[in-house]
Image (tube, rainbow, N blue to C red; front, side, top):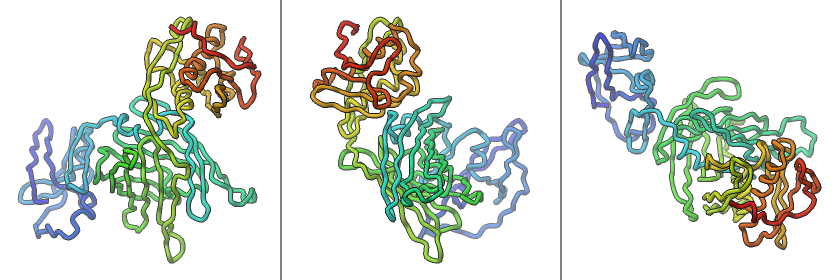
Length: 417
């Protein structure tokens, strides 16, 4: 806090060079180091404006030099302020959309399932339903259920609706639930870039009573698992309270463990949950087939997909659902379709789709044939699959337009370009 630079104020504009960081920014980082000194300051005797907008926070005049909080001025100029509590380095940066780095922290295809178990026989499950890209924003929509330990006797709502949103340099969780063992805040910044130890941020969030609270978040650990996957331990601490939350976030999966301080009675206690289903994550090169724009042939698209627990055929179907990367190719799976199950037995792969596979298809004999060719040719790339049976909502014999899905289908070699 001794480092000082003078403000340069002109009639036509203002250029403020600030190294005064608010005390809350430095809270807890200078333990054991007394850097204080007694000085005479004058509060708010100067009116400061940035591009015509007044700076609302206090300013101080010390020996003729005016100091203002770094964050207040940076935000008014459209900049982002970074702080690393480990290295004690503050930074001013251009706003960036960190979708590449933050999307690595979540599954890359719909259908991924989480199953958690925790304190006092608590459990909940959740499924990644959709990944939606908007302008400078990516939203992962998740739904699930908390285990009903009352055997149906409770009238509580056990459903879970979660959104994980990548916006700017933040991964933000929003939720709607009644009984989930999770944050007491319905919206919270889970993590921010850069993904390194010490990255620190401040959040404003409303608790269950609607009271606005200040939350300090920090990356406490950044390490590699024995499988070579990155894992981050993130701690959130409510200012003015003992309340905290801590999560471990693993690459390609998301939250693998959670704990918080339960503020019940006179003796608060810590409890939480962790991922129950063990997950082996690999990256595999897979050949997918997508229709050309003229709907006459299907074309190869070789992609590197995230594969969970060696379920490479499942990953391939999710890759088809996500659609092609090549703009010259067309999606083959109707929008909104979900993979319900996939099973391989003695050369036969049975794929069960949701009702949207039938209801949302655009129709036409050529388009229907392209959809089936895309699925069958993709799956028969794997040596253990010779033929494919397509089900809809657990039943065979459905009709995709003019195509009866009552028999297994063999590879459409003649339709490959």
